[in-house]
Amino acid sequence: MLNFLRRQPFGVEAFFERSLVLTYAVPATILAPLVGCGLELDTYDEWGFLAIAIVRTRHLRPRGFPIWTGRDFFLSGYRIFTRFPRPGKQTLRGLQILRSDTDRAAMVRFGNVFTRYNYRHAKVEMTDDGDRLELSIRTPNREADLHVVADLTSRPAPLPPGSPFRTMEDARKFAGPLPYTFTYDEKTKKMIVIKGVRKAWDPQPTKVEVREVTFLEHSPFAGADLRLANAFYVTDIPYAWRPGTLEEIA
Image (tube, helix red, strand yellow):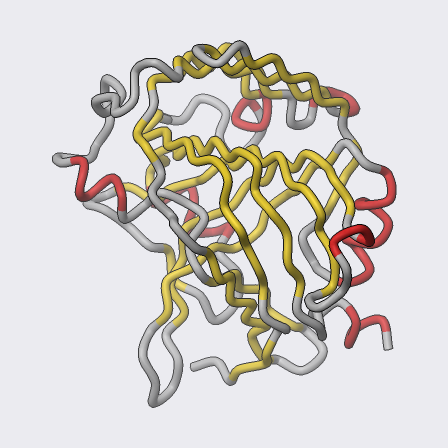
């Protein structure tokens, strides 16, 4: 029963009040071993990509439930850009979850019952004066501490220095979140595919100052050539997730 529940067997809806996504270019040789069974690393030249999404979410609830039943919380998530080649079907682009942090203990409990997103509890602080957004996330043992400042007056901003993307159009192809999330199910030997549905999605390239990101200080990232490849910001987005489905893997 627990294995069934962790496939997210029902739809979910929420409202993204704001979302800041940082995408780091990582040598493909480092990211490839982290990619799960049935998936391929989504690459650009010799690079793979790790997205760090920080989202202020409101009214998260099972789809169709009254808005007052929803829960508000912060989420920071670490995801790898991947591809899912399906036998006899179109290949899907999406994300594989490495870690998720939230400021609500209830989200840790229920999130880990109904998904495999690996929720952990964190302390989150945010300040926003309209021109400047500052986010600080603190985790036990500094496993995934994050401190970032976004200049909201700079939009649209150019690509960060050292970004491997040649054009902003290329960078937008790696502006998370992508529509699909993938998790390999050991019990059934199939892929759990969850599709996100969003409206009015127009993330704006934003100038950021990343002061701390301890997740990248640990193995296998420590000492590697890591580059901030893009940063996008979006606000006021209705968002929903369809029930998870099981699909055959190649």
